[in-house]
Length: 299
Image 1 (cartoon, rainbow, N blue to C red):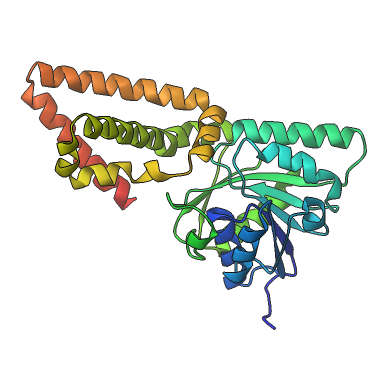
Image 2: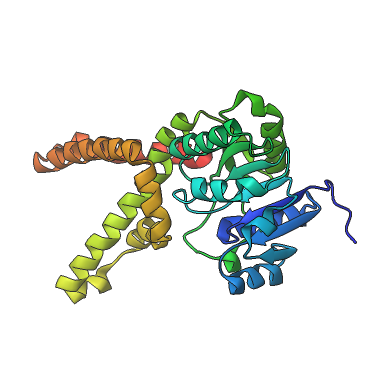
């Protein structure tokens, strides 16, 4: 039997691409003693076990989180608070709940409200919630596309909003570090503002462009034979899970809306440069864009 670095029992709710990769990384690096998969679809859980992402599985949430030291909620952001409320009565003292949601402010606020209300009634053991967001993933879905190294060399943002949860934050931080991730600590609202530009806006633009190309090709089928590689590159992420992105947009609507307004201003400015045939302005945009991309990729 493999010797694990920690006797921790970890439960993963939602063993898809990210949840499955989390489980694979835990097991490959032998970071915990047991990994339990929890979900609604038994065939997906069986596949996760077959692929080695989990040790056991169940569709019973209460049974799945019993005696767990860490519960990872890898579900759409709109469902995270509901799941926390559902599992809370079944958690043991000192359990740490964390997540991988792409938005943080509303999620963290709702979860802490749930924890506070429950604590006030004296009906639950003391547990902690550490919001997390690994900046890794793929447009592909499902545990079949999970990889143990998907987090290696990437950034994971943690948003510990409770000063009393420093010990819990250290545990989660150390876990991600051992998976090869770089850690950034941010306030939930800071996280949402930044990822609106670095992640959410690009997905919105990719989907809009893919829809536009679909319309053009429908109006004139010859367009499909004139599609260049740039369309493939720019629309790749439009293949991502629509349900997940609906939740993200509604959860981070304010910051995403602001980023879209900023993008519109830049497009309008460039449009005028083209209309007025201002060669220097056009050249300046492409030149700065190329330099900016080199710096971004280099960083």
